[in-house]
Image (cartoon, rainbow, N blue to C red; front, side):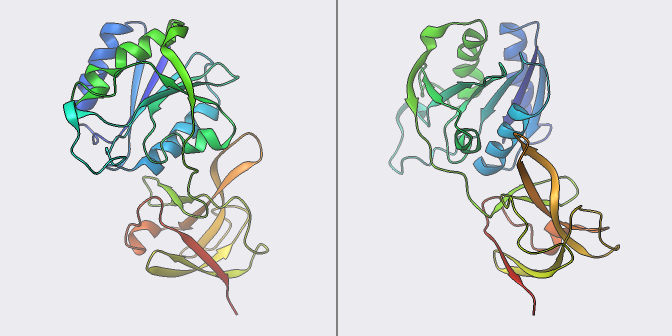
Length: 255
């Protein structure tokens, strides 16, 4: 069984090791992988959750997401309380369990996947993803239906925005359709920065040094393809000032 942990602890952080050890105790048969996203970045987390959940893989896999900025309330929190844990079982058999914070579950819900509250405390530890939530995840994996509560609604995922920055500095966006015909030059504004790009049908279908806006490698359900902004041979995220996920991507056709 594969359990993938999507969290904002930081690459190589002790927290990932501690969560992995906790799952090794509760689910010794599981292979646990770790996927880091930037601190408090629920948009990137939600995108990774959906990409992993809808992508090809073993049907018994589990995605466990914890990015919990505790921004659902501005007042002081008692006993380290935070956003609630929710779960979803896809028709494929994949189980997703994660904190319903920001957009962490929004991409999943946007595809019509029902979310249910998990009957577990939302408080009790500053490190809930190690101390509180893993036993509930293990119970859900083993079929404890009593852990599932009422359905939960979440805010929609950001539209026409940056949703993830990969290791090459390519910006994956929530644009799903071409803004103009292939070969058209466009102006792309991301936050306060702007760049000229070419609409193409593939991220490398432009000359070296050119910025392309094209359907990338991410997407799901056959027709949901995410467009990427890519500087062939360069780092477009760096060029645009490393925009955070959720930053709007505005496009106008040049000329």
